[in-house]
Length: 239
Image (tube, rainbow, N blue to C red; front, side, top):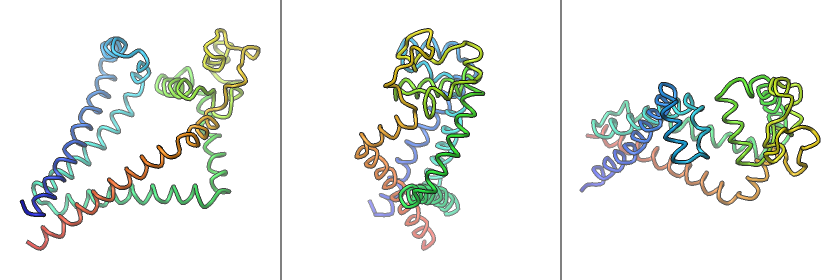
């Protein structure tokens, strides 16, 4: 097999896996939204801890659709030797790659800007938390899963829930803020339960090598995909 044929095969296999993964995620998202009841029963029987994903159907649909698009462009671009598809695939991956690098540079080099961004993000998150938690199933499910996994409460702390729609309705905080003690009120708040932003920072600090390795692996795959797409693009043009 020639080098060109090998690259075409690898491009097809790699993007074929991405395409099938996208189809699976899209299918789950549609299933959740169309027939959430049966999905909930099956998921609950398999793993009760994953019950919260029933409320993130739209996210699954968006991610699945994007993966299908990328897989389609990569597979068809390689098989049909379409320079247009390959270049579009390359450009999309390049944009994502540049955005990741730019984000990393901002976080590492501009600590003051980073603080401003975090403060701005925190205001948006707290506003959404106070208005939407307990009323919008998707947002509530994401917050519940996050708080249970990181053992945290709110963005900065349990105070974020004060004057919230949830607190005004139930006259208590989410039970995770009190280590599952119900009703969860100020007298039962556990001091060890920190805000989710601090908990996330601690998680990153404790698992920095793993997170860094995963990030480098993703960047490496993106770089390899761009190189292969560009080589195929040039080889097809020289035929």
